[in-house]
Image (tube, rainbow, N blue to C red):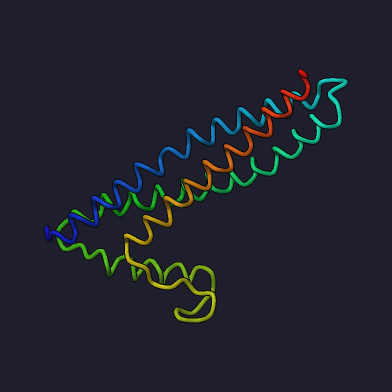
Length: 155
């Protein structure tokens, strides 16, 4: 196995393992969402607390979107990490074929406006990890809004 394939497989495996944490962030967000929805059913909640709880639904939706995208990317990177160590694999050719398939799937011609541009694996991994950071940020916003709602209701 060429060092290029070994490094590409290691990068893909590391990205897949990191993106696997999106599932636990999503579960925490779902717990906060259930808490917010249950708190909205409390009689005499107050307008401020109710507004904060309703506002927490927005970052919950953003977080859910990012969790979905992270899950897709985790499976994709995991596939690449398992596939590339095999004899005769060519990571650059596989990435190019993936880009062409992605463009064809959405009815775009490669190179046309809006079509995905070819990116090296390192850029793809950094972009996928940015999704995970955005998911964590959305979860933090959701948690802060739920906490603020609970504090305003208690005080």
